[in-house]
Length: 388
Image (cartoon, rainbow, N blue to C red; front, side):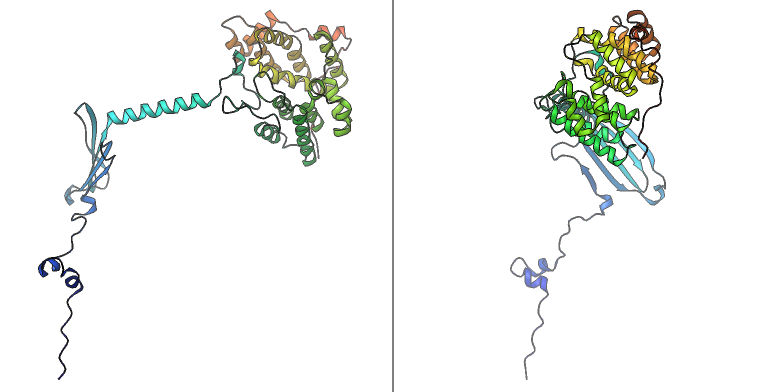
């Protein structure tokens, strides 16, 4: 008769036979926690110092509520540290203890770190009160002090601003403007303004102002190229063969002769504006951006430019029908020539700026026009715009 095989011991007994007695092997395995998770203490803090301690425990059923109820707010001080204790009841009692001293220290250190980092990586603005007048394209200087932005290709921020401003133009016109931007960036490669910005940011900003006036594509292209003949080796013939006679005519109208005096330059611009309205608009946009970014220039030159603006270009903008630009030119010019204490008010308040301009630099445009025998050749005309 075959002998019956004895039943095998349970897995726990077989695994634990080598360590301890059979009763110890049959004992239940230990668990991580013998309490419900809701009854356990939850602590969010570093190992050595508790910044925030949260404790929760179930309440008896009669004491439970549907809405949270504030039970206690208290303050504890020990070992020179202050903690705020807040107790809230609902289904569970939640106690939050915050180390106020450590929290305030953390906030102060974080604020100092952010301030130090911002001061380190933000470039200093150029001197002069006119820095408060923001340029059309904003501050286009490099983020790091010791790194200069390349002069070619044109800065992306400036080109994107111009592209957004010319959305009212047709696709072909916008491509032509983009070609002018690349041409100007190549021509002005290596040139920088007094503030350290690539020089091409100035003609792009002038073109952006013209686009805000909704001028036609030829005027905007001339705004991008208006300094190429005067400051580079580019000629009017180069612009004529590349972008057409309309653009070349406008660029030639705002190009100053290097040997001419200031009076002769103003007379030439006014005569060109009398023959072609857009030349005057282009010159106004050029002067507006120069006044917005006048802070990098020395004080005597700022005074000279401001007087000329108040005497000629602000009245010219008003005569051509751009009242808002005339008002801004008056405010910017008056803020420079005003006595100490009135510059900030003149920049912000138009009547004060007009009074300062009337007293210090009254308008002289009408006298110049009579002297040049232009009369009423400069009239208010509607802005040009491309109609596709």
